[in-house]
Amino acid sequence: MSPTDFRQRFARVTLAHAPTPLEFMPNFTAALGGPNLYVKRDDCTGLAMGGNKARQLEYYLGEAKSQNADTVIITGAVQSNFVRQAAAAARKLGMGIHVQLEDRVEGKDDLYRTSGNVLLDHLLGATVHNFPVGEDEAAADAALEDIADQVRAEGGRPYVVHLGMGHPPLGSLGYVDSALETLDQAANQGLSLDAVVLASGSAATHSGFLVGLRHGGSAVPVYGICVRRDAGQQAPRVLRRVREVEEMVGIASPIAESDIKVDDSWLAPGYGQLNPDVTEALEMTAHTEGLLLDPVYTAKTMAGLIGLVRRGTFDDNANVLFLHTGGQPALFGYSQLLS
Ligand SMILES: Cc1ncc(COP(=O)(O)O)c(C=O)c1O
Image (cartoon, rainbow, N blue to C red; front, top):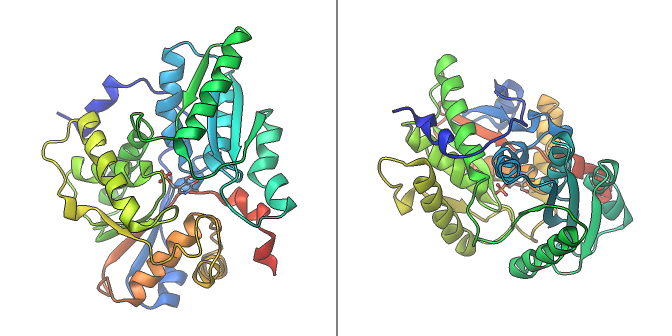
């Protein structure tokens, strides 16, 4: 039995440029003065400027195609990368696209509402619906069903990518793929990984990568940095997704609850909001490696990695991998970065 056998049970389309590079960051490592720091470049998945959602969409749009849908409907924050990549994926597959943009982040300016991912949504020809609520997954999903009814009434065949936990985490399978790919690359490079640090948002990436590593026979710890909700809310969410993904891939033995690590120390003041550690992380990787992070997810996660290193979490000779999940188009919606 191979760890990739599960793929035969799920429809999938190819959207991501893979394998993405796994690279050492020598200057950043020297600047932090701790463990050896590596980056898995899932910002380089290609689809409309890349990012983690390309791999997740391979399974959602595989299902959409298998149902003969012709229109994709999705919801997200105004500067959502998922929405932008879903719009691109739909176009690539010759489908229509409706996107719902939720007001999740307070106090944002016109640039936030018009540039970055929003500009790309329009360029991709998405029909944009605005949704005033940002913290109600059930309401956002219900509004998607209203759009689906409208598409059906016009003779279309909608496929809805839901936000809520009541729907199977198909996207996590893309991160089982990414983890298995990473294990192969590390083995080929003679690299023994000691820790992985990644963003924990909807938990699709976190749950998929963790299950993928364990399914592929690796016990390397995974540190999920909270970017959306506090650890008290995030831990049960990741656990639930992990159990679902274990079932989907047919893992040999279940992951222990203690194996789910979430840390919200870098979340404040909240989703999509900057803090000094986030700005430091953005500048540090840009100045040392020419590596661009995004303000909402990966800079917060890198702030977490920097913080964990400074806390002494890792040995100085450890090999620590940062999973770069993309999101850079949102940089152009964040004018405060310049002030
Ligand atoms: C760039 C980026 N990184 C990380 C995440 C978090 O991934 P997940 O939602 O799979 O937890 C997102 C989610 O939108 C994202 O856009």
